[in-house]
Image (cartoon, rainbow, N blue to C red; front, side, top):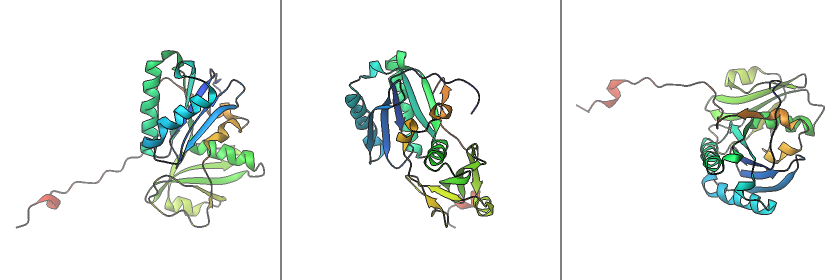
Length: 226
């Protein structure tokens, strides 16, 4: 993260559809949760009931929200996009709340791991991306690096303690010997350095690996049988 100072206006609505569950919550000015809600269903069914529950528990309405904290990914593509469309809609209906901040799911997971186990100064955390490739983040000398895509050979060559963050849809089996982590967006308020996880954005920006794979088209595949 850069040295840019992050100033979140509160109350802030947190929306996270990147994992196996839908999480929403409301953060107060002291950085504590005013309300939390977790829905163990698909984002299409769980997002809006979760937001409604969080606002109800906090005694707030959309017009009271002053910032949105959203997960940029990596994670469930459908969940991330549904949350993005929802936040875009809410900020248009209530422009005074259009202060947007994103955080990375792997960065949050790495920070939470360090917070829970301060003695960990080296680790490789991976999450499924596609067959033969992984979204990853490295902890080296106690410092959290950027999120990158690695392949199976790079994964096998690493000598770091290995951790695996399951995704809603997995394309491959977890790496052998990896310690499974659970994704807990509620840790956002427990991580002492949580403001450093945030990035101010002017619009919703989702994580992209920056790597595209194209299948070469061959006309013989589409010819009619003789």
